[in-house]
Amino acid sequence: MTPVPAAEPVDAAARRAIRPVVVYPNGTLEAPDLSRLEKAREGMEKIDEVIVPPRDGRTFNVPKGHFFRIVSIEGPQVGDLNLWNAHDLNERFFSGKTRALHATHVSVGNRLWSNLPSLRPMATIAHDTLSWYGWDEDGGGVHDVIGTRCDPYTHKLLSGGDYHHCCHSNLTNALASASGLSFREAEPHVHDVLNVFMCTGFTRDTHQYFMKASPVRPGDYLELFAEIDLIGALSACPGGDCGSAHSSDAAACYPLKVEIFRPDMAVLDGWPWPERNAYRPVE
Image 1 (cartoon, rainbow, N blue to C red):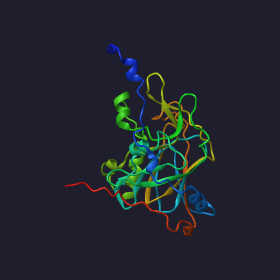
Image 2: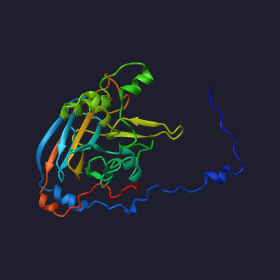
Image 3: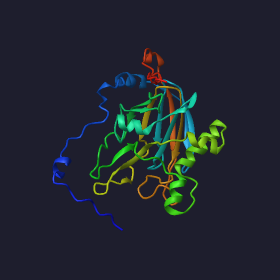
Image 4: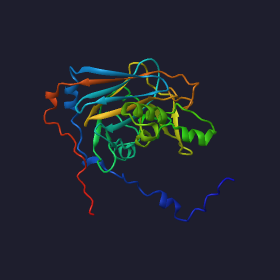
């Protein structure tokens, strides 16, 4: 049965005409010194790399003050990214607050924030070869903090089937393997993601979350600066470029590469490394 909308009141137009207010005006946020990060990038040395196979996940470690780069290497491929404090898995990436403080899609100069009560920058986006994309005619953009990650529970709910290579499962298996935790012990630490390279938005008529084929091509990358010691996990989404499906063995999928770089740390001398949030509740 199609729901019937309520009758419009006589002042409906006036109510709709009320001007919006940005929830979190971010003029008071301390902006990262991008020129200094750009200088730190000059001459940086690659010290490690990890290949993430298609429909699978891997972890990687990034020391504070280092850069990590997520790279498309063979074909258009979306990746789901989780981040944790390397010394405390309870501090992890908070996509919802990142979205509220910045936007639905992130790029150079935006930061990935950690969950409450820490609420501090974990990483800063330093370079993005897809920053040219902007917004397309459908309202789509790249690198979203809207979607949660494909998971087997929602897949079961909507299709009735079991699928074991969803990004949620890939990230959980990767963290379990790296930490020595069981799958069930690792699973609560897996969280909503940064959808790297994914092109998404909301339909204009029904306002539903949509995805479309990613514009990423081999050689494109997203590069981030680690503000604290990090453990990262990346899943090469089973939807490939997410142009048709996201939990599928039929979509063309490709590996992703994560590269870790050490800059000249002298350039970062005096960098304002973020402390955990200073707020303390009254008990």
